[in-house]
Length: 91
Image 1 (cartoon, one colour):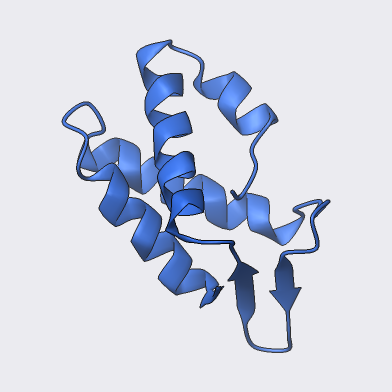
Image 2 (cartoon, one colour; image 1 turned 120 degrees about the vertical axis):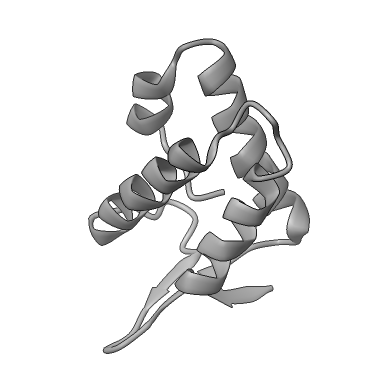
């Protein structure tokens, strides 16, 4: 499943919005940080496709979207946001 990066962000943010503990402010911070990270992201799985004007993310299925939201939620709950970003994986 191939998504434009913008669509990927929207899907993840939508999933995060389903958690009461993930506030709108935290979702915005996640989006800002994800945009920064993607610029220099070390893609070990070859799932980021960059062209002249676009970035695409290749995911196996929607479960990858859920994982990102779940990991972020766990990082918030465990007060481990720094560690979350250190080990950030797009999926």
